[in-house]
Length: 449
Image (cartoon, rainbow, N blue to C red; front, side, top):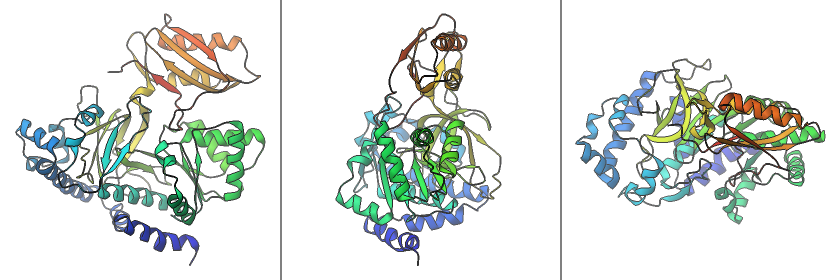
């Protein structure tokens, strides 16, 4: 038995059993159901949804009041589309009703919080059922790429939650699982050199982290002339941010591996993951995904809308029609891999990754990113739309950057946002990263709805 097989079939299942998680059984079930046709999957989801709603109406004070005010019985939700009869759940609703969101039957809830990269940090709770399903969903997607728990892994992450949990027990567990954590919130030249050295020593089979952080390490290695494509890395799993084409290209080229995009959040769960055939598969057994327009109405297939999720394993602290703040599109297309799991396409980023022109036109931040990204000598940048009248651009440059480029950037942004917009260019040594370790190219303080 190889060490990876020992971990994946013995040590990790034992770890999960000691934590009273059902991750192993759930993963086995998911590996069967991923091949079901959509009709069978929808039947499973509807049955689970009805059980969730009945539990929420009976045992969760917040939802008992919701159903009471609507004079609606959970049994009246007879199809997934009937979910629209229930109100959307926003972060503000959870903040205002934190204790009332807990099931009266919940035991041993774990407190979580988001990093607040959207400007809205959130405290919430998860039960063991939900954690088991999230672990299982990620585990299934990992195995799509020919790697498994127990294969050497380097995680480039920056959430204070993970980093504060690095006690002796956690460190011992990570050593057994052959996982090494690199803290993404500090990206100095010295730290990047250290990361490259640790990668060469570890020789991981897989990477996991923010696309911006992995791309940053890759570009640093390329500048240093250090080869990382001879380490045997099979795949880089990226999540937590929008993956841009140039990031995918840089990661794939420098590390010599495939890049698998993932989409999810702490509160929303493990929502979708890319398979080797390219499809962004929704974890449909656990989630109902809706796309809505600015008025809250459902949008059609292939049409962009805000992603709203209902997680079916959240009886202890229900997430029903939760607004993620992200924008994407659903498609009827079937993936060439043969899995029946529906596909999420064109995940365009958070609603805060969009900007608003002076005439009210809403556009993706890429409209401004392209203005800055391709200017020679721009190492790093960040664009902050302060208001309809003012936008700031932070620039970290090298010797190739010309002062004439400053005016070109101003004019390029002005053409997109409006000629009357004031564009302030601020030259900095380095772009500060978010406290979570993420990097955001676009931040807009202008409401898009």
